[in-house]
Image (cartoon, rainbow, N blue to C red; front, side):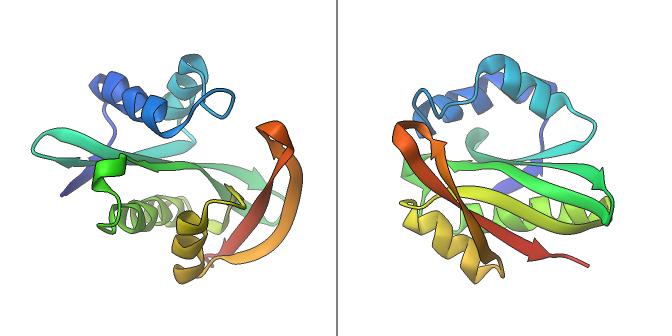
Amino acid sequence: MIYRLYQRDDFDDLYAIEEVCFHPPQRFSRLYMRQLVASPDAATWIAEQDAQMAGFAIVEWAQHVAGIVAYIATIEVLPRHRGRRIGAELLRRIEGSANAERAIQMWLHVDIENIAAIRLYESSGYCNSGRADHYYARNRPAAIYMKNLA
C-alpha cells in the first residue's frame, strides 16, 4: 500500500469512495468535499494499491483560544480493503499533518454503532469525551472522541 497526499486529479476517485462508504444523508456533497480537500487548513491522505485508491482520510484544523485544534472530518476505506490496518495508517498520517501544524488536540465524531472505528480510535489513544445526540440521520447519536497531541 502506498500513502501519499491528495492531488487535484484524485477527486473523482476520492468521491467514488465517499459514495460507497456513505449514503445520503450522511454522505458529504460534492461541493462540500471539494471545498474540504482544497482548504489550506486541511490535509487529505490517500491510500492506494496498484494505482487504485483504496481509501482516504481528511483532517482540518483551526486556531482556538488554547491553540490549534484538529478535527478528523472522515476516514474511509473501501470494504474490500478493510481489515488490513489501512485506516490505522491513514489515522497516523493525518495525526502527522496535525502535528506539523502544531495542533494540540484532535477530535472527531463517530457513529456509536461503528464498532470497528471506535476500536481504531481507542487503540490509537483517543478517549470518549461525550456524546452528540441526533448527530446522524434518524436521530442516531455520535460519540465524541479526543486525543491530546501536545
